[in-house]
Amino acid sequence: MKTACNWFGAGNLPDSLKGLPQLRNIPVELQFVASAFVELQHQRHLADYSTESTFLWADAVQYVSQAKAAFAAWDNSQKHAASEIFLLSLFLGEKLSSKR
Image (cartoon, rainbow, N blue to C red; front, top):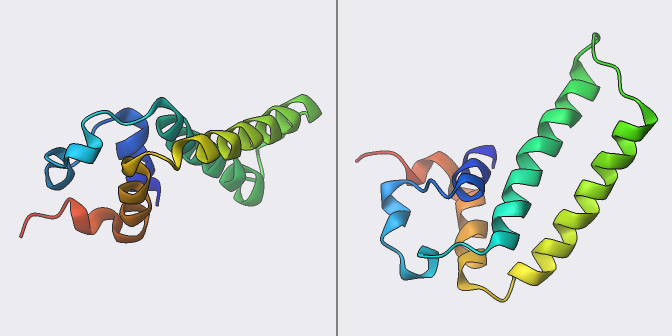
């Protein structure tokens, strides 16, 4: 999932997806969803597995706000055909970038 989110968040798609007309212009909302997923997953891993990490209340509030904004952006991005390919990319991940 992280791989696909990195592709869509940065707009740096693998060759197997670059030619798709639905992805010529990835909606900003979808890029935000993908980037937020990567960032929030990273912060969650720090919170769950790093004994050296500490979080302030303000940090937690910011991450919750970012998650809420990502859900709102997802609602707005679902009307774009790119969203369906994004969902498929979450499932297939690195298989889309492998050279066969």
